Length: 423
Image (cartoon, rainbow, N blue to C red):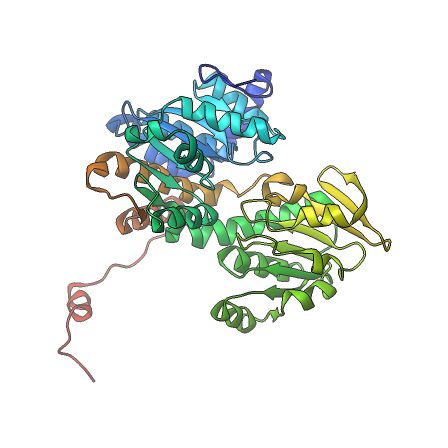
């Protein structure tokens, strides 16, 4: 049955009070977004703008939605992952804040796309995406709506990769700002947020002791860096696999073993993929893994672990814990997949801490304001976050943390912009 854009589709509106408590709790750790919301309430920079957002429906996201609404936006929200929705938060947004919300934790694939269609029925003028699914559906089957769209924002590495591919092929039909590329996003959200919350998801799902385990991380981008440092802090023997020579060298100099996945597959106790690619853990790796190996993913899509190949190899699959599926292989070995191969920090835990999402969503809010004000000047391509927005987010975060920094003197400024003085 098609989901109506006129109402909401959430699990249980009776959960709204519980959801509001979670939203308020997250807000305590989001002072930058709070400051922006207070300004938005007065300035109304998004007045009358229809926003379609496809994001993880969490308490942190709720605070972003409330900031957009405070700025005058008319918002519709759907989930960007079937396992990332907090049903109580969805209920609060729908019933207490009048935000059209289409998200149910554990929704099947058909419902997931029905919810995206419902958000697009809102006829958004600005899209806000986490993985580019909303943009993809809009470009594939809703092209008649594209002339109404002035621009968009994208939250994730995976989504930015997809959007840059669209732009390179000349099929992207409106400007999008890659929020993921802001320093105050990827250096903090990806490294500190995903680094901590991925371990949180693994530990909550399995209750395994990390100390003494061989912990294999596929990918040494910002997420891989954060995850590696935290796994090492728990006493794990961390192995990194990479395809980029510079990142591999960095991992080695950071003190981690660097191996090819073919070799790491034999040694690992716990595997986490954070590459944004496909079939990073594949049949040949499953064939040599230890009995009891744990497989998790913290990349955006559930494509990094080849679950189809694992299904084909398995003689039986059973749920052994709420977020753990055990695949029994023909030779008796058992491999354990966490969270159906989806984002384990959201499938098994609560996602990023609010303190880092404060910066990511501050970027989202300010970029929405920027697009609305500058849409006529922007081309059909992917833009980085304007440097002044990135620096403003950092400035506000430091202010909220009570941290003061130095400023250059006139003499120092002159020196940095001159060439005459030398040794």
